[in-house]
Image (cartoon, rainbow, N blue to C red; front, side):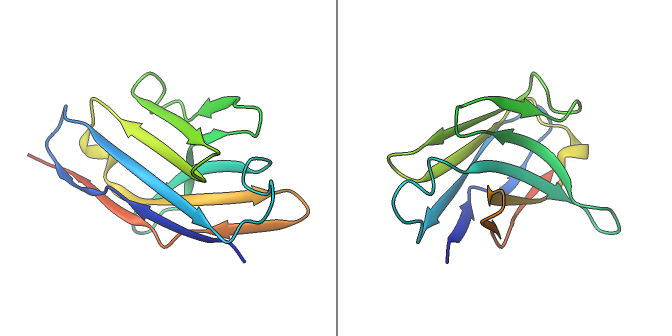
Length: 119
């Protein structure tokens, strides 16, 4: 059983930055380093959408709406994945969720952290 705990959310003004972190516990052996890790976000009434993902090889992908502004990284030694949110916009307001995925084996989600961008 893998537990994911997100942190770093909050209220910022447009143009400012935030850093979200996701700490994974309970992953045995090389489970974390061999996983796909990702950040999703969701607003009321909308489907959860992929924001950024990073493979076990370190290959990154981003939603078009955040490309060039957000940056995902992982620290396999610490079992953490981070998301840097820069030049934030009001439309970035959402609950952000961390996901741990090993295809065919396990799929876990964190409880989410609220990010609000408002002046």
